Length: 563
Image (cartoon, rainbow, N blue to C red; front, side, top):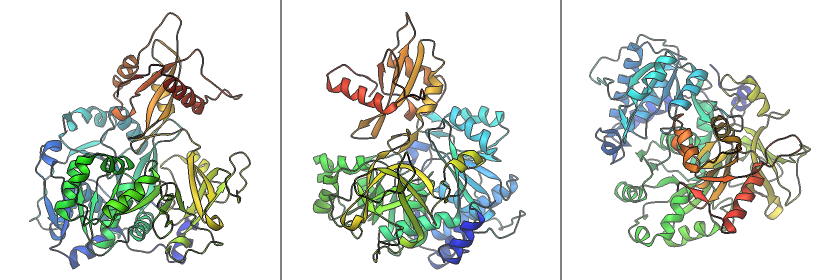
């Protein structure tokens, strides 16, 4: 199954941006050249979160684990172009699975740990996977036992990673399809939420991931053998493109971390002499504000810290560089392939780096320091007219195409069609303005879509609306995001209550918990209104709800919160 359309494949290959090397070929070369180098380091708290002991694997040992898992998959009847859904925390087995799938031509579909039966059932109905891989428990939550009913319902084979046999001494016999995997075949299907109300599967190939990895490697000034700490879930762009492929490119050491714990992150950076990591803005802000943490932080090995997923305060960039001599790089990306970055080379002014990005992919703007500028085309367009904006200070939607941008959502042709304009540019849903000397920069303004981003997780307000619509006390309901210093946004709901009824935030969350949705989707604020604000087309104005909420809070009106 090809991940990209024929025109993109022909163009990007002819330009030399895409090649023939697969993930497995690249890894196998690394393992041959550096067999005794440490490849993977498990989280030190692995036993606490999974009940199994942490391991450190050399490249030779990792290669043996991959060989063994290929035999396991083969014995289980998993074959080329089958889809394997994977729900695991950041432990070495995730890396083993990605590499084994790449070798066999099997498609991996990683799923965040917070997803529960409702989300899993939706994903299974779209994917029809051959197998679902999870573990016995994650923290205090039983995984394989609780998900068995969903697997049975959708006729999916449940594989418990704790029960798989990694017999590294067995002969490397593989009875499956021996055709070599092509670099434009689908490697992963990652999940993203939008305004449509259900998850969308983004198909990405070896070449698409490699293009992202090379851009991140350039931005972070990656060096051979670097030690990279990954604290983001290995399910999407930030971790797979930002950390996993960076590790592959530099043949380095990948230090895994899960879940985010600031003290443990600082310990791992110190003990493993980490060179590069990507952290959410909340981590950077807390490190600079909490004197105890800052006093015990040894970042002397750290060269670069990336940031992304939410707005970063401008003072934090300057202060990290001043106090720790660590360059902060601001990444702006998506599973679909948006790939902007703001580095000291493209945006030297630290105060601008939190909100401004190199205006990449513009032939009229030479970027001698930006090696991958020619692999992208970008523009911003007026939301009403669709005309390209060429003057400073007028917000418009960012559109992008190039070597990093996907071609298809899995089995959703209408959504795929609507995601692109007539010229093949992906509609990002993000608002930017032109800024900087000679209009060399994009300035981030906000989002023109309604997706809520809480702590890096994309949440569809439409999904929350739908799940609450059958509550016995609810006449109308609309979910929306409200600003939060730590998580970027939190979820609020506005409710029009039925006559002679009352409702509390606890009623709302209990109703959602009964439907077994992920905990990060639970609202944390509630306002009640006589009617929801709507436009002439009867579309709920969620931005106006946010304004109403903020006005109530600023007016000392008591807010209801689970936080």
